[in-house]
Image (cartoon, rainbow, N blue to C red; front, side, top):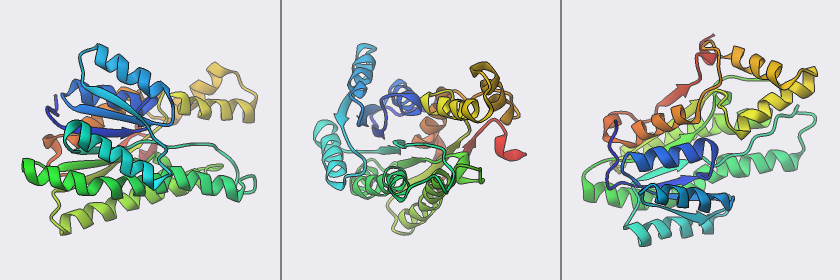
Length: 265
């Protein structure tokens, strides 16, 4: 198993779902984890992890506000002495046709899914760079994109646009950090449909569009993946742990597709 002993990780949207699984997996790998989220249940997640003997804490955080990113990164430095790993996981999702999508909704999607990633990366780079120089071990930024950032899909114009933006922002940031010799690796993860609250939104959409029941809609979503099932949050989490660790020390600017074969078709 990848070792994150003494690493300091910040996970946005780390209260539940994929973010919650990443928080727990990084704790289990030895990291000190700061969970940031707009949801107060992030405090419950941190307490749950602390009760298991892990070093975790929570900070309330809106990823669309630059000052809050600066405050959150400062919290990591003041509490733990720096930052080694940033996971830009916070995101929102709602499927709509282009005609149904308002400009306000479009801007909201970009504000959270794209600007949040930019602001987090901008705030974190100086601290991660400093720690990577001190430790002589590369820092890591991991951006959660989606298969929707790789292939198009009806009713996903806004969402796909944001996740495509995250994909190329990741590659550009990776090349920039390498050219400036910051010793920071930057990669993206592209999940298929994962068995989380957000994944349930996909099921609900199919139910609304087809009039099918929950079990039938879930079966349709499962069949989208050649492996015939939803992904598990823990499977995405283990990918993130690998990318945060020295086991991936020669990997940067890469997209990790964890989709049960969905995009291979």
